[in-house]
Image 1 (cartoon, one colour):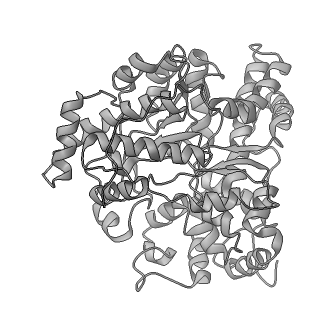
Image 2 (cartoon, rainbow, N blue to C red):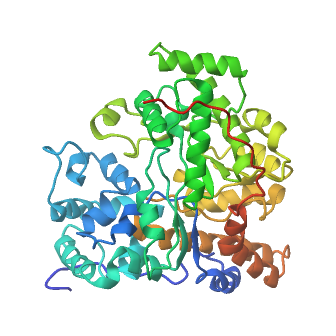
Length: 492
């Protein structure tokens, strides 16, 4: 009983996500212990740099833990709860009271049983905030007040949590027309050693069917002072923005294309397609897809020149419900996986750059069928290609374990890239890394128990997966800098 309430306790099992078999669990404990406290290398996140640049206190539990996390909001919405009740939607219609949003979440805590979100949220509540009772309709107010009290303390401000979480490096994901002012503020901040770097995400400029394409091209011209009135100028401006990002510390680009196609177009055809779209002509879906594939090839070429690692996240039908997209915007949990052909799609790019020491590409998927059939064989032979961590729906205990089982025999551990937390929910970062380290320890323990590895090798591998491998995967490449394509400067 707590304050007259009949509540369930919320605790963290020290052996959570480790094998059930006692002998293998004992091995996993030793392996996990070696990697558990290593610094976090967070190379693909969606936390806004302004969060750390401003270092303002979090205002309430709902805006910190619920509203920004579409893993949470999508599952509650699946039970018929309007997104407005979770603080999402038009200003005049959405719920603004954070206590009421928190009550709605707590009343639906049961929905998260068996999900990775339950693991992450439990970790956050217990380990970060010291909570000891489980969320429910009856305990919602108690928890809201307890967490709010914590958030008012200096040690719960963003930078203090950054240091407490053990984050060594945090990469954000940024628009190609971002000013990067927040990153510059952080880099110039005296007395704070946290390292936060941008990542160049040019999707809105490379996809001709993007709703704001023309406006973003105009802003690209303004930011770079390069005339984007033709395709040649467009490429030059993209190259300049990449250099701007690299100067701000960026190590990578990121691309969320619908397919993995990388077929280049003849330059004249690309120029004609670009000019037609810029003139306001109707562009077919096939033309837009072909141009995006061509531009992905161009991004690889530029990576050879400037050393930025190219990340590819294809195979997701974004904003599956058009009405949700119109009313609530993107990133509301309505992104649905679709099949991807990597073997044929990546062939043009890998033909050109796959054995080039100046090039590094990291490929992610939500299509599990491709792991053992295509991606592991590709990464197991092309020096430039590495496999990204299980992502989105596969960022789960069983998904991570299936990933190791599917790719290790063909690609090994060292052609993968360690863990990528891919989150907007800042407080979930350590929970996600912890789960990944536990699953890797579990897989390695089985290899030890079955005689495939010595315990010393397993411990070394676990430490490499948690820390050394992601650092190496994103290390700057030996770029071959080329002169930027000739382009006219904008005229007044």
